[in-house]
Image: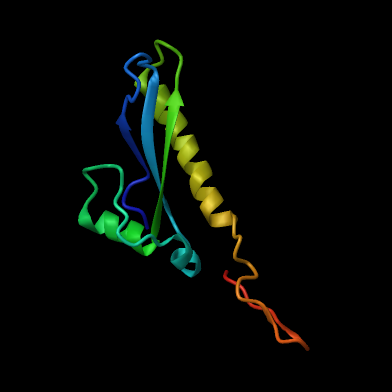
Length: 118
């Protein structure tokens, strides 16, 4: 399970102080972790723990980096609430989107052997 869900990284555009860059971490179902694994990957968040990076490298956790632009004067509580909604959508997508549902199915010229990843 991902140790954290949302990390606000920075304000990447000096000309527009209403943009925040953030990272989302989602937990990956065990059967699909190999597809998410990225050896030597390190989180964009420089304060990630070695165990966080190990989880990202092994595919136990996946990271999404994005930005959010808010209206001038928007309070941080509104930004936080929106980022929670975005994290939930990301976690739901990781859980529910399985492009490997028939991965490894083979045909030997006579019959199919249907397999897949849960």
